[in-house]
Length: 246
Image (tube, rainbow, N blue to C red):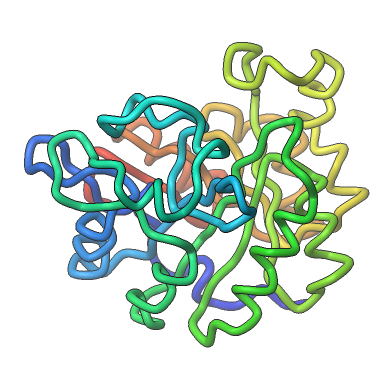
């Protein structure tokens, strides 16, 4: 599959164009509308609710962003929609609701967030929903199991592998060897991604440079300052950013 021009045409706002000072919380409809108004694409995340429904939310736990405690996976969609965000009147939405609201107005990067116990069937659920969407989108994940499901069941969906130098505290459930394989893009041989999203500070490593030369586009995460931006412009094809206006 040839990667479409929109994947590298304009920067992606990381979890929407959020701004805590203005009461715009990450991964809320307010943040998404702000990104669209500013002319950016949207990068967002989906977590699995207790019934398998993809919910638009980044963290595994509710505590940091909402007034509720506990793991997202412990609650139904109806319960999660009632969770109040800190400092915002926005409420959590399902992936289907998110797509209906965005309605092809900008390009989307949708990252599947998982834990070790997350079933690969979650990726199939995401793929089923996205296969009906008419706007520009791509799916990515750190978890190669999810991307492999998409490759096997939804080969026409644009898919990417998220990677970088994964510190143990970010993903304590996986081994040092698994992190080594992720950093060196070993899993690209198994899941055949159309692009990768690589940590900005690791872009000069051999693996992402070879992928860019031989396979496809490299997106860079998360660009937060001028130094990051300069690095990404040299070694990547597009950026996922926050805290600045590229």
